[in-house]
Each structure stands twice: as structure tokens, then as C-alpha cells.
Image (cartoon, rainbow, N blue to C red; front, side, top):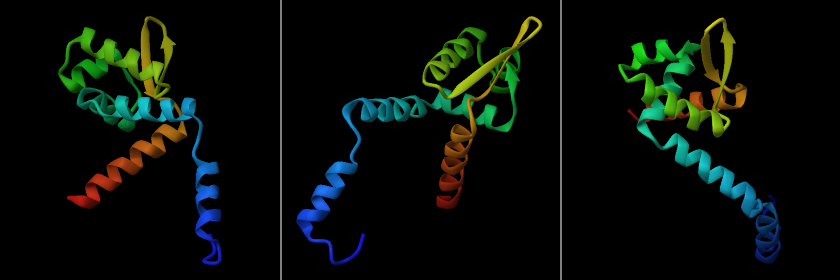
Length: 113
């Protein structure tokens, strides 16, 4: 914004830009889902490659029930998707938005270290 904007105009403009409660609820839910270390490990693994449940179990050294439970949460949040190939189900990050968000988080954390 230009410096000529009065503080009243600025307040009005910022207030108008803040999303409604439903959008804010969705944003905070996504951050809560991202905020779990186990889910972050799964997302990181899927950031590297599409994997089956058994692949995730092997990579993360977790039980199948734990992985499946967390994948369900990630899928409900719209962060992962799956595809069936025969009897196997393969998981990947949902879309380029999730890939970009997770990539940016990784980059940000690595810059701090």
C-alpha cells in the first residue's frame, strides 16, 4: 500500500482482507494437522516419493495401524491423495500447493539451522 493511505483507510482495508470464520477454521485445522510430528514424518516421506502403506511402514519404522490412522487424518485434511494399483494403495501429496507449502517449510527450517 502507498504511504498516503490514512490509518483509517488502512484499518478498513486490512479488515476487509481478513477471511471469514469458515476459512480461518480451515487454516487453523491445516496447521494443527501439520503440527503433529508423526504426520510431519509421513508428509516428508511423501514429499520424497509416492509410497504404499507398506512402504511408509518400512521407511518410518511404524506399525501399519499407526500409518493408516495418520494417513486418514492427512487425507481428510486434503493433504494427501491415494491411488489403487491392484491390491496396493499408493499415497502422495495431494497437489502442487501441498508440495510447495511443505517444500517452503523445509527450506525455511533448513535456513535457520
